[in-house]
Image (tube, rainbow, N blue to C red):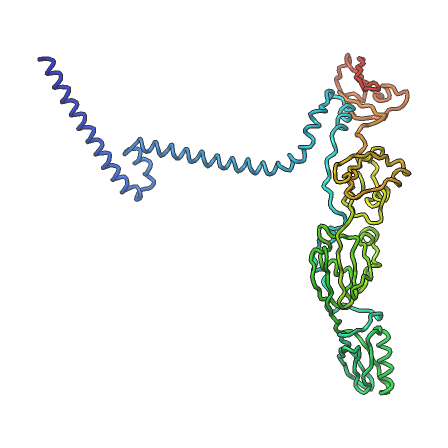
Length: 460
């Protein structure tokens, strides 16, 4: 009996609990509906209502917001890291080639200045970024070199078809005439007639017109100027940066057109440029004479129909290291190492001349390395340079000769010149050279002994 009563009581309690749970869920749903209606009206109380209505969902929202915040922070950190990587990339590239060398040549005596210099000497020389010589002069805006429509002309200017002459007369006759030279090279003056002017200079034409007008009129003066220059087309072809047809005036020169065309392309030559007239090469241009010496003898005036042709450069030599003008040079008449070094402006005072390295491609099969002593002039004058040779001039080692180093509790630490029979008192001449309160019971001299520079410590 007792057992049956207990079971019935438990079933009643269970049913009450289920009913209560259903009521609580229903109440929660009603509260959520009320929250949705009032949330938009009262956004400031949103968080408090959410916690009262459904504490579990508010906790989830907070956790989601925290996760979003963390993701945003991660993205910002990644951006900063990426930016730092980009900024540091160049520095890494600069130091990359030294890493292996520095690992091999760590100084085990970092406190010795002399040994520091010795180990610095083991660091490999950084490869230079050299560019073809002379091409940078064409980096300017080509419009700067466009022909001027009305430039001043001198009395030596040669008159030709298409020129417009301004003839000013005063005295017995006061007038101003504009006369265009026709295809036959002639002009017509009133009361004088038609006569040829093509091929004459402006100065001689001025005198001729004065004479002709004087024959017709008494007490008349005349002056002749160029009011408009004739124009014509020329052509730039071959390995030019901007090949094509160009309309220029009669005072435009060869160099003007070279700059207008942007110079040669990457494979075009600076030293083998042809000027053709009537399908014949009338001039060979080597711009190295202009770039290196300022010579403008090749800068001639052009004529109608002229063609400028840039040929492909044939032979180049790389010169890098400690020279005055490291660059990639196009060689033409230069055949020896001595002549190529002259192109590069020679070596500088810190160049190590006894071991100049030359890399060469041998018979399109392999690369070989040769070492030349530049101090032997007879050898450099006989050494023949080949296409694509790479000449590298290394620096002298950063080692101070005949030097002693003073360090420690002194006013003037540093390097001093070593002289024969030198004593410690020659460096520390008085007690005033030492800083206050020195430890006088201990001092040492570190000496590097030849030939292997082994360290010897002398206690004082």
